[in-house]
Image 1 (cartoon, one colour):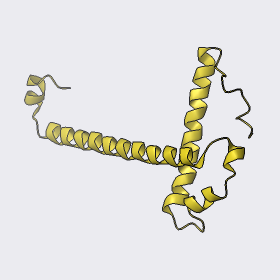
Image 2 (cartoon, rainbow, N blue to C red):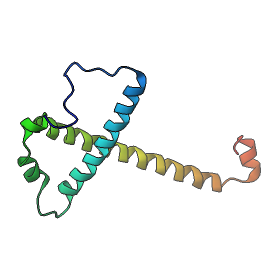
Image 3 (cartoon, one colour):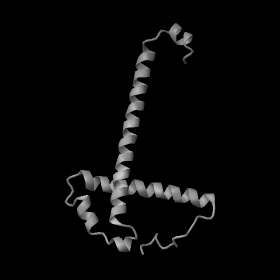
Image 4 (cartoon, rainbow, N blue to C red):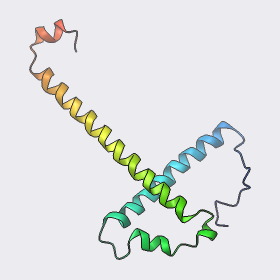
Amino acid sequence: MMPGRDYPADYRPRNDYNEQVMRRERGDLDAALCAVFRVLDTNDYPMSLGELLGYVDWQEAGVSRAWVDGWWASHKEQDRLRKLQEAAEARKKELQASAYAKLTRDEIKALGLK
């Protein structure tokens, strides 16, 4: 087994602090893996992501290629949805700022805006 995967299958964190640390580390690992996968998946890199994953010893890794492929597909979809949400929020702020700029001080006051 690879380092980091040598805990028993029934391992559970002992307290909330351990849970927080594990969640933070999981988030950091997801972000790092996403960054590497995105480079291999979207750039003119000498080796594609699929080719690279073909060299992995999945038994040694302790996870399956299917699990990694599923994680990557799910992660890309989550990124896509997050970017859509961020774009919608940015557009809303732009519209609000534009509308606010058109109001007079009296109109702003009457509407109870800052």
